[in-house]
Length: 275
Image (cartoon, rainbow, N blue to C red; front, side, top):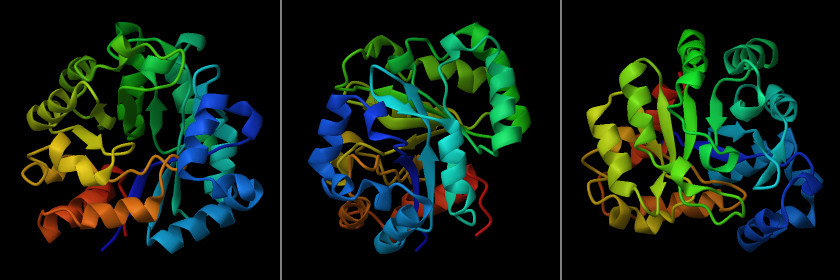
């Protein structure tokens, strides 16, 4: 069974992340702080994947200083560049602070080798369907990369939840049918049903289950097996233990075929991995 984690955070420097973010990470992953350098390097991340039985992982940059934290695209590109393709770099930036988001995205893909884009509307305070961002989505389609959006709740200070409603992604799914859209956290808290409905009516929309206790997935998504083609495994490491989440997912009373799709087969297609 191939396992792909589509939601792993990189931490470039401890001081670049907010105290409340560290509080969350320490709760779930205290060993990270016992030897930070050994964990937050290519060798350390690959060792962690091997121990968890994970073949590939998407590693996320983040540009949300003051809300969650900051990890540069350059750091993520370097981290993933020495992994023989097992660590897949996703870029991130605040489109409010970029004069030409489409050009910025192309630069990150062509010069740094980023293979996807992660956006955090509720942290950076913008609506995903703002027409000003449409050239960026057009460029993502041209470049053949997926775009991941943080959806749903967050406990971090400075978050504005109105921007995290998955319904804003409906416009994008209609206007850009060839754009692969990933709803990180599946509309956590408020909008589980909404997130699932978007996957039902749009072929190009998916859910990653990062940040959700796997043992509760059937409570959040009662039709998980029925729509298993649209779910992707994500851990939200270091705010989770990857191996533990995999074990909990494998205990769910759903078919082996559904588990295989969620844990890895769906991500092979979404990330265009030839394994």
